[in-house]
Image (cartoon, rainbow, N blue to C red; front, side):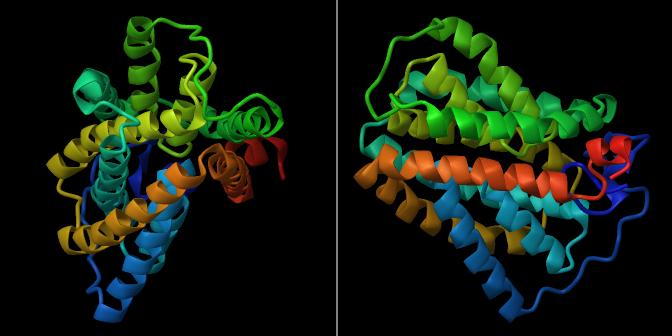
Length: 289
């Protein structure tokens, strides 16, 4: 069975559950040639651009690293390192433009980080099959919500949940999900901010990047402790992520909901299709597809 996190081999899966634990014998790590590093840089730039607007950058970076011959577990750890640069870059750009107040939202980001750390640690005892089976339908629901609801724009709406309740419930829950599984985290944060916190699309995007930065820190810390981070690859890709996120966030701020909504719909649907196309998807196995 393939790993439900990286869609690759079962090297990081034990007993039917996803796990951040390193394998008993570490696989030989490949030497990454300069030309390959350059391609990974380009992939990270594109991922950073897309992720800063609508999320889903992992759909590009994780397959790129796997194709480069990097073992799945090291791919996950290194992906969190390079993702820090993208989410951090986008957060910085949105903050400078006044779309998110870092000082006010720092506790929320810290709670997201704590949730993700626990998610990464407890991944060995959380069945991944249920999450993986349900995720495509959740992503399609998000795509339909943003695609069909007519009054979603850049203006804030009525808040349906208090900030304290939102911070203490949904933020750690989605952060935990990012640590234990990952794909679609940005879409879930976006949906929560728009539908429950009453944020406009642009403001929701800015806050999503901050909380995604926090969850990346939490999960990265766990992978770092397990020693499955390739620094050279992660830093090269991180540079691409940083630059791509700077460009993407500026596009989002200039055009707003007109670009964010369609891209969010497309990325959510693409990720849902990507998950369902995996032969090891639990639903396909259960139905015998």
